[in-house]
Length: 426
Ligand SMILES: [Fe+2]
Ligand SMILES: [Fe+2]
Image (tube, rainbow, N blue to C red; front, side, top):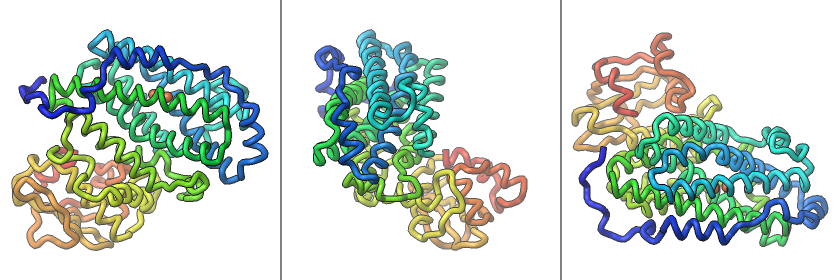
């Protein structure tokens, strides 16, 4: 539903983008993935690069290759849903780009690294073992988003779909990843064929991201509140998966140091890229309710929080969760930030009476929700549960109803409040 909120009066970065200019840039920047000469790349790969460098390159390039394949396949419902012809045409050009990126990565993996049989399916099969949990989750989410967009091509669903594809996957994930790779091959003066290809991929992605920002800015002008909700919901739903995409196998940081980088630096780059694009759309994260990005905290800490939750198994597929005090604090603080303060009356207190760890409470007061490590003097609702079982619920590894049935989760006090749990923590 459109709202009557005024258009933003301050000029946004999106106001400098036009669909015509984006299309013209596409025509001017066509390139060939099949004509790249990988002769020197093969020599560099076999004779100059270290084992650690090859291991990192294979891992990162595989993540990219599978990502490029997924985004190639996913764009057609976007063409149908786009309200303007100019948007449909641009998305058609983007689909061609993504296919070319897939061909480029597959050629390198096949002709330089020696994987697969040259076919896309062969290359994907040969590199599937490199994929991470976060990667599988985010691209499964993209597939589901494409199905949802086909069923419901409304502006709201289109805003959600563009946020996942152009803002989260392309701007906050792929572009910072490309920068790591480009900086490494340039500094070491390696892989000239790959270098020319990835430079073109990066230019294409810049255009795709600018297009996503422009579409969302247009949707924001037509419906500021609805678009803000769509964008921030998708960021909230996928933040965990995004931070897990480049989680190095076994948390072995040498996957990053081999390329002169760190997981936390990539986290900072991803967050910075995401926040700047959200701002360019016209959304003010400081005044947004339930912002999934805690912009009041220093950037270092925001990047660290994502890593700490993953490393402690408080998000992600692995058990058991660590009881590291800082990680536990981040978990409850995240819960407080995500809570819908309008779903309960002011003064409400919920206590986590953890059976084998310190208790925590969330209190709702004057439109704010805050977390505290202590038992409540008077809790409206008490959740009696073990730390591991609660961590499984928080990480969405288990359905809370199942723990309720087996009495591993025992709510005490105001059970009507418990029944509203899904509304309080959507
Ligand atoms: Fe791409
Ligand atoms: Fe792209």
